[in-house]
Image (cartoon, rainbow, N blue to C red; front, top):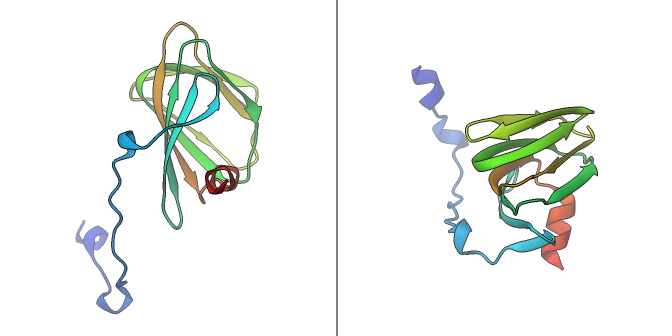
Length: 128
């Protein structure tokens, strides 16, 4: 197990960490009822996503791998034509370029999306 914590002192970076209070950021409303609060690093992006009840994120695809997991509520995901309802403690791994979408029914949902590399379309939107 010590190999997990091992480090190569010569390969260490002088870079500093960035501290973010994600829930204090002004959310970006992507669609009515769909709010994003992204945290962006060099090689990954974490996006806190809030779905209001009866909100639909249409089926789409992108070049980045995505992992979505639910913190509160529930959300119905369609991935490559297969549909599952995700609840607290559940996740879905979506490979690059696989069609997927999500929707809430009567309840809201707070989920976290992890993108590798950072999602290009969202970065472009944040720059505007």
